[in-house]
Structures are given as structure tokens and as C-alpha cells.
Image (cartoon, rainbow, N blue to C red):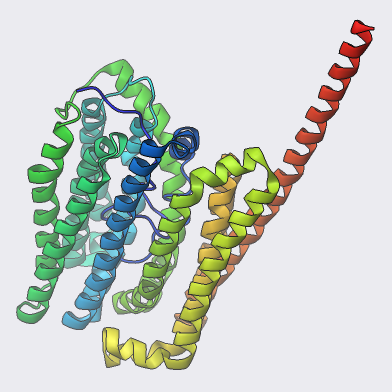
Length: 486
């Protein structure tokens, strides 16, 4: 079946950092990087969606497709938020912390080893790599991921213990199933069938939530939750995602040495970027667990979970305007600044409402969501809410940097954020408990925001200089033509 012209949808794997709409990302936040920071994906969006948006039918189809992508993001974010709520209310904090720590271990490894194949596939206009090639590479990378996780668990078995090792391996299996389904999502994204993706997200969200709710009432072992999550993910991927993607592409795994090697080379840089973003998300937990224990991991992740919903909404808004923001950067600085200012205004409004609510009724919010055990962390909750304001700002400014095609700068910004977050978490958690990682998130979001603001200012100067240079050349050309006519 002939493929239609690709257009951006605003849904990315990822997204890895704070606020992405891809499955099995995390229970925390996934945002500034995943959807926003993908060079290849945004290059595709900026090139095609910008042109399509002016057409009547094409623009309507693109808007409808983007709406389904946003709905899919909403299902994902709501599901992850409610799962954390159900788990914290139904299971011991130490068990919840083990699951969240397992995600912190597995997710960056998964992003690095599994590469960013979907971004490469979706933005490939010549069709040199098929979905089957991506599935072949993904199968090989999953085998490698399984071997790495097995080795890591073997090395840390005495420290982690058998139960935590089993949890981490189950999380790894869930991640592998999600990464397999992600290739099917790439087919749907490339052929503008985000409605099918949103339906898939809704099915998985409802089933996993129902399973978590049932277990929280009747079972005390959280490993059963992961087993159900794995069954739902693999089942929906096989019974629904595969069938829908198969209508548009051949989804049988294939292996071709030249094509597979090119896929690896193309997906590795993007995979490194998303890995950095996910590390920035989880780095605090790497220091919390050995210093304060598994229960503290659950406490800290629960505080951040409240910010995750807001970040997911912000990510959807950012992805909806990215193509236009990229076009405005080329066409004129005033429209670019105006649109960026509007998006920042929306993010600051939402973050301001969150900070106000937490400042006023933080203890009550924690009691309603997670129970009495979490009320003691109301002061840290206020700091995390303030960090959320900076995280949303860094997400939006980071997306604007990518719209200006400053991809290396975007990666440098995330690297700075990871370094600051890790350094402060390591220095402060032992002396100040959860206050340390909370302030580390504030510092990380602030540093990324400052760096991205500087990049945008530099990009604006370069754009104005290029415009003056172009005008000067045009004047000289006109003058030369007049002299020739004379």
C-alpha cells in the first residue's frame, strides 16, 4: 500500500526526559528531551508539517492527527500518574521504591541500547529502512539489553538481594515489550494513524489501572503488578498494534547487514541524547536509594509524580507548535518571539497554579493522593513544585532551541543539567535527606533554562546578522544590475 506523505504528529518515544508520550517511559516525568530534543524527528516536522499546514484538507488532516497524538499523551500521562497513586496506597513504600528504582536502572540502558530507531524510520523520506529492518535491529538490541541487565543483576546480587533483582528483570522485560511496540507506533506515526496509537494507549491504560487497583486490594506482592503490566503490554502490542501497523507496512522482522548497520549509526546519536535526558530524570534516585533506602525512592518519586501530569500537558502543547515555531524562526524573529512568549505564558500559568496549590494545601494534597505516610514530606513537595516551574521553562526553551536547529546545543544543555543534578544530589542527600535531590532538580532546571536562553539569544543575533548580510548582497546586486543597464 502506498505510503502517504509524512507529517509531524507531536508524539515521540522517549519522551526520556520530562514529559513524553511514549509508553513505559516512567512513573515520573518525561519531558524536555524526549519529544523536543530529537533532531531528526523535528527536522521532519519542520519540513513537512509547515508546508502542509497551509492547505485546507491537508491542514485539517494534520490537525486531527495531532489531536489524536495529544489524546494519546493524555491517556499515557493520566495512566502513569494514577498507577503511582494506586501503588503507593496499596503496597508498602519499600516495594514501590524497588519498582521505581528498577525503572531508574532499566530506562536509560534501554534508551541507549535500543537506539532511537523510530525517529530514524519516521523521518526517512526515501524509504531505505523498512519497519521490518527496525524490528530486526530491535530484536538484536533487546537480546543485548537482556544480557546487560543479567550481568548487572549478577554483579549487584548481594547488594540488591533476590527480590529486587527479580523486580529489575521484570521491569526490563516490560521495557523490551514496549520497545517492540514502539516500532509499530513508528509505522502508525509515519502514516498519520495516531488515532490507532491513542486507542492503543487507552486500552493499555485502562487494563493496567484495573490490574493495579485489583492487586492493591487483594495482593501484597508488587511483582504481580509488573507481571500484569508485561502481559498487557505484550498482548496489546501483538493483538492490536501489530495488526494496525501491518495494514501500512510489512512488520515481519528482517535483517540486512548494510541497512541494519546504517540504522544503528543513525539511531545511536539520538539514543545517546534520550539517555542523557532520562539520566537527568532519574539521577536523584541513584543517590537516594543507597543513602536512604527503597522507601525514600518511593517518597521522592511520588512528589515528582504530581509534576508529571503538568509536564505531559506542556509537552503536548510544545509539540503542537514546534513546526510553526521552526517556520517562524526562518520567516521572522518577531513572530517567533511572540509564539514562544505565548507558550511560556501558558506554562508559567500552569506552574504558578501548582506552586500556589502546593504552598497552600500541600499536606492535604499528599494525604488525599498517597496517604498519611507522605504528609511529612510537604516542605519538600513545595520545593519540587517550584522545580516544576523551572522544568516546564526548560522544556519550552529547549524545544525552541531545537526549532532553531541548534541540536548540539540542546544536547549540551541536557548534559549540563545531568551534571548539576547528579553533583548536588550526591553532595546533599546524605546531609539533608530528600531536600537535597529536590534542590538539585531546581538547580538542574534553572541551569538548562539559562543555557537555552543564551542559545536562543545567540541564534537571534545570528539570524539578524544573516538577514542584514542578505539585504546587503541584494542591494549590491541591484546596483550592479543598474550599472550594467546604464
